[in-house]
Image 1 (cartoon, rainbow, N blue to C red):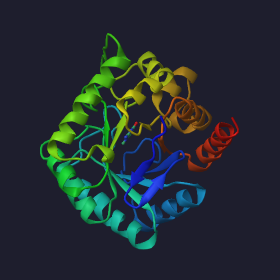
Image 2 (image 1 turned 135 degrees about the vertical axis):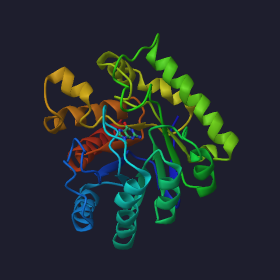
Image 3 (image 1 turned 30 degrees about the vertical axis):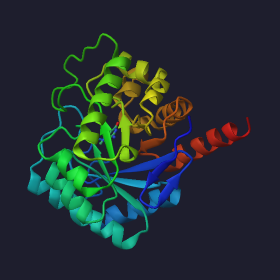
Image 4 (image 1 turned 60 degrees about the vertical axis):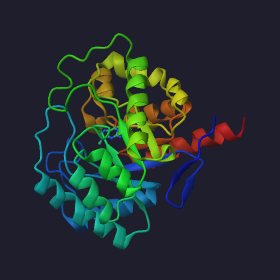
Length: 276
Ligand code: 9MG
């Protein structure tokens, strides 16, 4: 089944690249170096030139053990940056947050998509997302970011994650979110061991049964770091390989740090698919 991804007036029939813009001082991937607006805008410009379709703005790190960020701090980090991006560039922006108030103010500032690693389970999130009318990405996580890697357990990680996402889709629809505005995400690295993550990647095609666009976020994840014994900033090749494998398994959106390299690889992948 081919899925066309609709985001506002934009229609995508090819792999969609979501470039990561962390505006956090504790981000593991960029050391928080994009906190000033000018630096953030320069990074956005570069990612757009390299082939990003969406810029994912996040003000709270979701890496295991990361400290919580207050609402005020998260709003300060994200809302102004989103306004500045939307003023300067004609591009899609997603807000990476699990707080209802951040979702609301980010959408008011121009964000086109809500990306919630907590799948809209926090107070008010479902209602704000439904009222906003923008597409939402709902992700599976076992536990909470601070403790999720302590001892994740599943009988069957693939079927349990699919069941969870089905239930969250039902809750979203019951709250008034139209199904065509829902993107699903297995949540690589969120409450999963190395084996769980690789089982999910190997069987990502099972998620097609949900009938919704699939987002894969494998970029610089510890599943590759642990496998290869490398630090996050040495995982570009592994991450690109992961993106291509996810594309082969039916993923539509790729949340990545290395935009140019992923775009090149996915362009090769698409050409091969079209040549069949
Ligand atoms: C914010 N964030 C970090 N990792 C992510 C992933 O794998 N998926 C989504 N949707 N968001 C993520």
